[in-house]
Length: 138
Length: 408
Image (cartoon, rainbow over all chains, first blue to last red; front, side, top):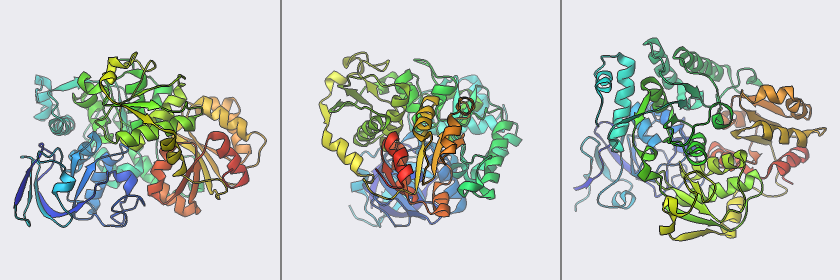
């Protein structure tokens, strides 16, 4: 079990499987939100499903639309369970607050994209700013 | 966070459910970004097109309106997704229009002014230096911060609405002087000439900066951009980099000198000709077939509409060409005969929309549009994720290509 400390985030405690990319994230630019897959051809996760995953990305990019889109994705039920960033931007944080989606950033132990691997089982606790990797030994 | 008595009352629900929601939203966001308090804002600008807002968002807005939500500072809107006077011809459905009508009714009920523009800094009321505002639309925010010297974070629709309802926003990010100092120092290697060159410069600087928390300062410019050029520079930078503020040495108000934004302490990085060319070559090339030509992102000023009109005058376009402009610009463009010139050639001027935010994927599929040509670096960046193969060319080349049906 590995415990990572991060900044206090937004949303409730969630548990799930990590999907990690070095790339940056925008709900408007990168996703086919009906199919629940990354649709931007030059995104590292192109073609992969994000539904039910805990996304781990470097940072957020692009427009303000994502602030609404997370809420719509959550209501439709085709949504990541949480999003973790090295650094979030304001829009994604606002979107998480509206949607009630878990989001954390600024990890004390370094680059979250290196610290977490795709397939890791995670417990995300935004209130205390901790993310626990439960399937790996330190 | 430190809250005033009034803010605490809002948060406790003593001033109604609407203000409770708004302040709670602001506290959640403020806490994540270590805001110490809230700052009063003079204006809010809401991005709320139906594609982004969705059915869930429309229901949310209707609930707030029914609970008696009323804005307390002037609150205006970003472009709509559906031009309600012209939607079926471009393949938008009744369902999309109905969602648009619901959102408009809800926002209007709250006292929001439906300005439907992403160039409010050209058409409504540009903010002044030091003015705290809560603006949505990344292009609006970066222009207001950089060219005007105003103070705004990127406020997504829900947050801008919360600011309109409380008259405040959490004081973090670009509301704080310390976050407005430069963190990257770029030196240009070529002098931008047309709008697309300025957009390309913004795209390269934005891509290199690559985060909301970086502030580029750009030096080496011998030319002062016009408002339209600054608009394309900023819109592209924000689109490629999530960048909310830049400084141009000797041009923008916070950077009379390099050292006034701390740029003298940073290593200079060249925006080399190779970087500029490689950005251009990502988007199509001569001889490629064109399905549709779009001028949008940001909406065109009166000056830009005139330029497009002159290029279209007396010509015969062989592929669809769309011009998106603000409702404040359109009446002038019509009165002066610009709309007539564009539409007589076979183009169409859309009012109060911005193309990419109007169900671009669905209308692309409905019309069989894949190869889209535009002079906006921002729109070619966005539409790659929407099933298009976008190409970038300047305004003259775009119109010439619309006449020929392939990139000239």
